[in-house]
Amino acid sequence: MKDANYNSDFFVIKALEDGVQVMGLTRGTDTKFHHAEKLDKGEVMIAQFTEHTSAVKVRGKAEIQTSNGEINAD
Ligand code: TRP
Image (cartoon, rainbow, N blue to C red; front, side, top):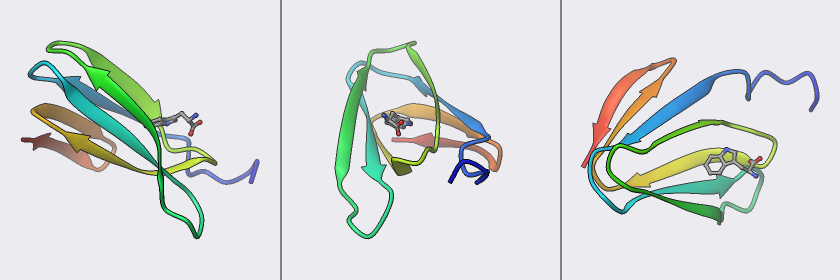
């Protein structure tokens, strides 16, 4: 796992309204939410995919920047 490159890139989530939720989902056979972070307008979260986190769900108005491009969540 140490040599895997799944966590090399950071992604950035910027909240465009209060109460944006960033939820981390577990890696592995069981896909469960393991973390919920609330961002208020203007707040930024910088994160990586890790040994524990393989997917992220964003609820609310937010700008998301990744190495694959940018997208807006509503
Ligand atoms: N403890 C989590 C982990 O190491 C923290 C985390 C990393 C996280 N990336 C995330 C939580 C993305 C939510 C969204 O995997």
